[in-house]
Amino acid sequence: MTETIFKPGLEGVIAGETAIAAVEQQSLCYRGYNIADLANNTTFEEVAHLLLYGDLPNAQQLSMFNESLAQFRHLPDAVIDTLRKIPTDVNMMDVLRTGVSMAGHFDPVKGESVDDLRRRAMWLMATCAGIVAARYRLINQKDTVDPLPGLNHSEQILYQCLGEKPSPTAARLLDLTLILYAEHEYNASTFATRIVASTMSDMVSGVVTGIGTLKGPLHGGANEAAMEMLSQFTTPEQADAWIHERFAKKEKVMGFGHRVYKNGDHRAHILEAELRKLAEEKGQQKWMAIYDAIKKPMVEEKKIFPNVDYPCGLTYYLLDLPIDMYTPLFVCSRVTGWAAHFIEQATHNRLIRPLSKYIGEPSRPVAPIAER
Ligand SMILES: CC(C)(COP(=O)(O)OP(=O)(O)OC[C@H]1O[C@@H](n2cnc3c(N)ncnc32)[C@H](O)[C@@H]1OP(=O)(O)O)[C@@H](O)C(=O)NCCC(=O)NCCS
Image (cartoon, rainbow, N blue to C red; front, side):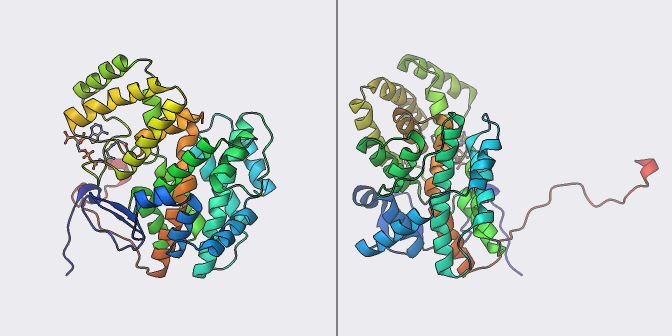
């Protein structure tokens, strides 16, 4: 008989194998490359290629990858019409979930070979970015913007949102966040996506599931929740008073803590250094003072460190992006990790079906309805 173990939240349980990423206390690697090395020396498209194809592209492979993305950028009219029909106050993650599901009916990639799945992943990358940008335009009562040939993925997202070419700083920082967010082994949304793959369902269903899972504030929704928290303060003193009240009430602070990293999140260190430069460049050091007023007591008094969502929320804020777009931008990146895991699961499949520990009523007979 197979030995059974019970770990609430599957904490510490190895639920499968992967060759895509290794999340460790000392390092984070995508397919063997350290995240800091990737952040300093690659673009998001190169990282997406790495995740989907197993290695970094050479110049010719990168150019073919970019051509495929460009070919997939136009959203079907039916998808734009659907986005138009959704009330303007609906959360953008919900809109994105619906948009991807709708777009799935127009999937231009046919077939289920590994190469078809990789191409479908590229189509989903382009589609998520297109939906986020189109929705941003529509809720601002503006026409959608056609993709502009020659822009990279980050520039394209910002261009299609804002209707003008982004500054090099904005494009580079968005690109950095996309690199940092792309993959993180068996996190909740990726595991959910792998479960979908394990039933031999389709990649669009996997991505829709990933979106629904990422939305929660204990997962990707933390970048929005962290910025909502910071935006209530106008001084570091207010933030300091608030955090100590929070400690007294034993309530969680969004953007801090991690199931795996207990001594800090490598991605947060990388992004925070860039965020400090951005705040200085924009003359917004006031925000860093508020940021530090929350961080210092969390680290010094609670020994709980920022995760990547903490600096990411403020980075996007200083780039003037609306708060409800932060988790959708996370999707624009993580869709690559989900797709890579979908392919890995589908090609080495065993149905994911754990057990549960029953804690309900003991066995009992059904009483006739008149006696209940
Ligand atoms: C991510 C998270 C769910 C991982 O948590 P976990 O592995 O389940 O750890 P636990 O929730 O069991 O936390 C262990 C202890 O640290 C505390 N803790 C963890 N994260 C905390 C946070 N963000 N704020 C305050 N306390 C926190 C818990 O309250 C708990 O304290 P206790 O032992 O006194 O009860 C958790 O850190 C969290 O909720 N963070 C906020 C949401 C967030 O930023 N999510 C994005 C993750 S990348």
